[in-house]
Image (cartoon, rainbow, N blue to C red):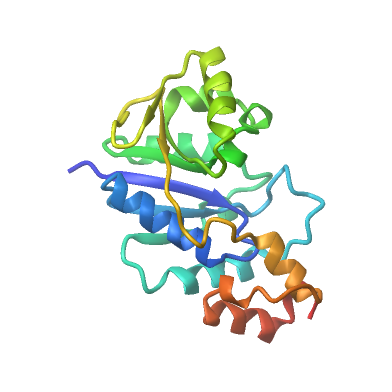
Length: 213
């Protein structure tokens, strides 16, 4: 029996409540069986960011997702040598699970950078995207980018199930402004961001002295 699987990639440096809320909302809206949180072990675009070990980031991710059935942490990219590229991950999963349908989940600000991704046009052609609109202004930019590539866009609840196609999801939540950057800034002495985190993730950070404190 085929499954509908969402793929949510990121460094999760660290994972915060916004990441979890995103997975839950997309899972429910698109009736996904599973959302795989694919930890990027060696992200090519974030070489200058302060990055804790992939093993510790995975521990925090597993801890944050544990209470939520259907949300799973994946170490797939940790087990592969070299930089972590989305096209390689999607290709691997499609070959390993040919009967399943995959949906690549992204925030609109990240998706607008897709022309910088490895083999991005091939990626658009081999997996359906679910893009969460983070800012109203991004909608016009997305339409322009995808229109130039001949990739159609539908606004939820209309859906694409086969690529190419981008499903656009809009929702409001207190967690949308949450960011790992703000968490790291708090740990270096900035404004309090504890409310963005699962308390058990905070415990791991404090136990290991992560991000500056």
